[in-house]
Image (cartoon, rainbow, N blue to C red; front, side, top):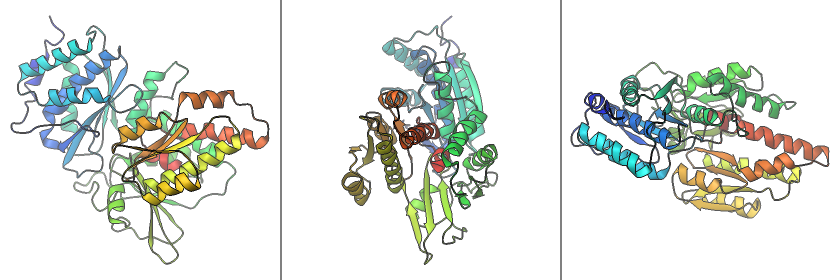
Amino acid sequence: MTVFENVSQYSAKHPKPAGITFAYGTAGFRTIGETLGSTVFRVGLLAALRSQSKKGKVIGVMITASHNHERDNGIKLVDPMGEMLQQSWEGYCSEMANAETDDQVVQVLTSIAQAEGIDLSVTPRVVYARDTRPSGPMLQVALEDGLAALAVDATNYGIVTTPQLHYFVRCLNTAGTPAAYGEPTEAGYYEKYGQAFLRLVDGRPTPTTLYIDAANGVGAPQVRKLAAAINSPYFNIDVRKSDTETLGKLNIDCGADYVKSNQRQPVGMTMQPGARYCSFDGDADRIVYYYADESGAFCLLDGDKISTLIATYLRDLVSTAGVEDLEVGVVQTAYANGSSTSYIKDTLQLPTVFAKTGVKHLHHEAEKMSIGVYFEANGHGTVLFNTSAVAKLQAATPQTPAQADAIKRLWNLRDLINESVGDAMADMLL
């Protein structure tokens, strides 16, 4: 009996469509949902191998197509710390997806296992979830067949946002270690970020209502759960564009990509001067803010402006904290607004580096900084505290109440940030 003995039988249920070539990119696989069955099945197989290559650590699988049209769907793998799949494995994904026969699927699995020196006796562990797209249930069945073919210890997290799944993966793989990230449940997610938010806003003026365009996607029910968990006037929200049941509404005339591309509010949303608005994308990993000025003109806070605001706040806190050799840096792409780059470098006087387009490249550069801030203009981004920064904050001995408060706020900010990936809900609270 071989480890791959059952693969051909399961694979026969999910034949590759003829004439289509699949490619795994920064966002994983993404195309018309109804054509993805074979690919999703095979990603299940690869998730098992990836887990075994990491000695049984949990690997995540997310079925989503983010800001794409509702007819599309996609799938991507999440590595053990909640980060995107290691780039060297992207080629394996494409090779596997394009195998033409069931026997070739087994051959590709065998060659990957040999090339990576994988111990196939290790029990693979995988967690998975999906968004609200109509093709999701069908693709979930294909994924589950792939996991069953290799006897994976699998957990289904149901319908959640993409960043929530990244969070679960990181929590599961750090549990019981000094780097423990939180409770790997929806309730644990809301508790971690909600309580960090309340600690930061305690004693401050109560804000006005925040109007949220949830793109008629999974962010709508999840942000309402977050609000219920926070249960505070400091987080008073009104969720719009929240219809996840009616076909044809996801990301249509709404969502972060629509607002950013068209420089206007979602269709049907009336804006009032002085009110606060934000938009998620379909799987809630992007966010943009906007408002109407006194004349009623639309004003957008895209990823470049959000990054600048966060970097400014962090710079001021680090300066007040007085922690030696703790520095804030910003990562941008060549597509960043030039005025934002000049402001960060010349006015804030913060180090700025440029990365290739793609979140994985920005994330990698931010990891090299003590505290790295990165956002793409589309609103996808986060903040990273590297191990050196964490050690310095732990060792810090404040000499004044102001220093003590700044250090406390830095810790609370770190708890408020989803360091594994850009997260619209966590970034919204930030």
